[in-house]
Length: 253
Figure: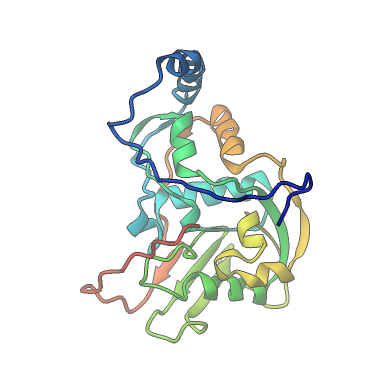
């Protein structure tokens, strides 16, 4: 078909060019971008906090169990939005942070996606439905596995998916199925990502600041730089088989 100017494509040829050592850098371009690269690296290497312990975010662990990094991120989300509960998908947590200085680039590695913080009102039964989805694929290391704050969850993976959540406690009290709870999450889950369709049924209460989550977390760390979270027994998994090795799901968050 002709384009808007009446031109027609008569022929096209192309070839793929592998990007490897055979491609020599163009010195003019290299010199042009060098000052910007140096400026960017300086900003990415800025120390904004200190991890007093190793913060565990490696794929096999954060997608199959409670981790201290998962707790830290969920706690921060709940605090940022003054929520009752926070639920975030482990697939959005992409790296660990070693004990010691925390740099801007570490947070960009941990939270690489362009996600936003969002506050949603859910009933207790909807929270339970979200958690059933969260742990429905266990022991597969699936990105929907939830890291949580403000609640304690017990699951029994020997049961069928959708019937695994045996107890949910809020402040030590069983969740009220008819009660209403303010839940902090990210916009990926709010829009039904990773099977969290129930979030789309919730009442939208607002965004945090409209900034990417990683940038909000960087600002938080500048204010509260000492990071020392622990595994607290927020996610209790019954009837685990010690010989069971979880497979890894390579889907993105």
